[in-house]
Length: 299
Image 1 (tube, rainbow, N blue to C red):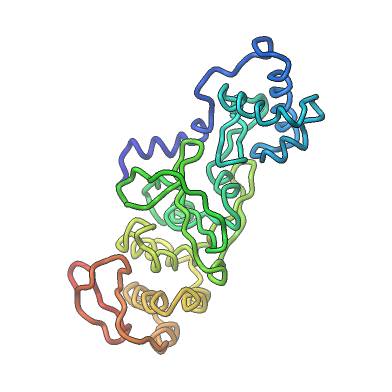
Image 2 (cartoon, one colour):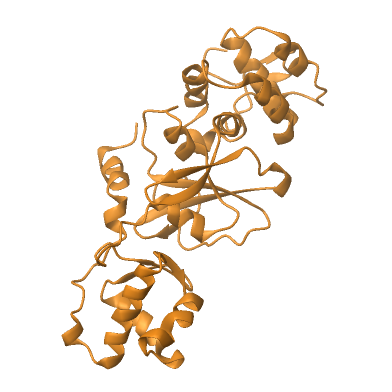
């Protein structure tokens, strides 16, 4: 289980995309700062809660701000808590801006990289497959995407993460042909992409380390047994690799799910044994039906 401290951290994310200082008053700043504040108001009115430097330059003339001073204005707006820097050239409005709802961390993820889909442990949480609250936002993208990287996460998992707006983001890259099984949902005032139930479960079989561990993945299958589309999973699993398909067959059999699915998965050709828990040690008995080394406690 994650600590209460991490749970609190996650639940308070909207407030973390917020200023560290008291916002400046219009009367306390010179003319260019006043124009900067007017720029923030215009961005809010235009629905640009997350915006680029280019967008700021586009709107700047409407508030009397010369292009040469846009960078300076953004610098002071960030220092005084009106905006938050997400990555180079990308900003989010502070929740203190009148009429602006807090920017959701999933919304930030969509802006940090494209294509993007909330995935793995974050998707487990969304689909009700775990009672644990992830302390990082897991984001699926492709190997062709430009992924931001700054610093190393402090979660002890050794994975590099990116911090923006007070939250850590874990980007997991996959080949473009494996970026599928994504659906669109509303989160607050934003539409975001997230892996569907079946794809989320398959990701757990492929990378259990990003889903709480293999034990949590098996538990998730039990939680989803009455609502998951097994036919769809049997078709999609080989697209993520034959090892994922074999693990799916093993888990379905362990869950007592009968039918032609098992024979279809068992018939897939594979060279050599693969580990049942992809992130576990190479130990345990060999299961010839599924061509898996059952590297779990008790096997």
